[in-house]
Length: 580
Image (cartoon, one colour):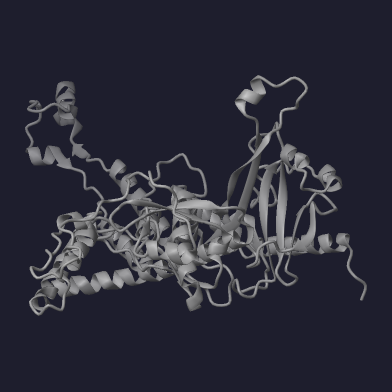
């Protein structure tokens, strides 16, 4: 079989993309994701009317109750070596990856992907490596150059670290025949860049750059999944990063050019394609999961219609009276129609008042019609798994403590399932970030961690310190909100539970007290509050006495120099320390 040309490969890739677009359009995925996003924003009516309509945005409340419960805090990523010889490197890798997650602002990008998974059913996180250099000239050389000598710029590394960023679900396309990330044959990302930037990018082929055209897509395009271009004066081009998993190659091209911007080349990353998928509720034999809003969409619309009907009925409600016209003159009718209090109404007829004025029978809707709101919200809570208490309400049913605990456990079961998905995705992102640093990092870098007593410690490392095979796990519950009162209560309960063992001498009371102060009450330096044991009276001569107080703390605020040495020495210093 003849080898395919570059043109044939590009044509085949474009055909795959068109097939994926048709699949998403025919199955309604793009329309569903846009509809769920609009529902979250409160745009829950598809047509425009002049009449008043209410929108009770339970969808917004549902998403913003679930999201903080699973991804509000910085995760604590635990790294364990698969080989005992790499145990010291695992400690360094754990400190570094937690430092990256906090100071590279990865949590912000990850939380956006989490909201995508709750709203649309899935989210994407792209993990890569960014290396940026700049040429700088010293000020004194630029201002006072020596005659006959040229000013030599200095190359400065601005950024040399891995990154993780959120990618819109609308911009990632996959193999239509896939059912999960394990059996996809290819994956591609659509990137919208200004046309001028693409034409000036020297990484791309010049011939292909000259062929790129502006993708001037209007709001009512045949392919509504494409983004609307707001700036008409400067066009945008759509660039595709295409990862062929079956051949382990990566390429870059544009649909408007008949040549590759970057020809197929081996995937640059050791782990393959760079995308991590956050999956919400899996559907058997379907690649795309469903989100939390898709199942409550009919109930959300019913709630809006019910409340709109109630509002319209209240506006139409008015009391009317029947009266005998000959029984009142003009003055009497004016007084009868007046809105003032204590108005005298003259009657010129001698008939009984009951036959002169009577209330017009009003048609009132049954009271059951106005009880539908609570029923609909109850159905939404049952479908979404969010309880009324989590929404900030109080239940009218009185339950015992055991019943309340069972109800809360049932409500937390679904949150725990989402939390497991979040922790698995964080672990995968951490694994890829360490692999990228091990592959691309140049020179030495410094990371700051916080010691047991709250003092900052700087560690100096390079790519050799991250060598080895590691298992990445997220400490259970580290991304959830911290309940300070519950944590203190648990610490005090531990003290009560350990009291019987204290007298037996099998519990180290200073360490227990330090744990309670640090974990229960957040004291960073608990050793300052604990009295050290005194030296025994009969200590042998020449033996140094036991110090009576805590040792001198290292300089605060990062004043100390970075620690360097072999990984084993740094690991010994980092035991029990966490990133700040």
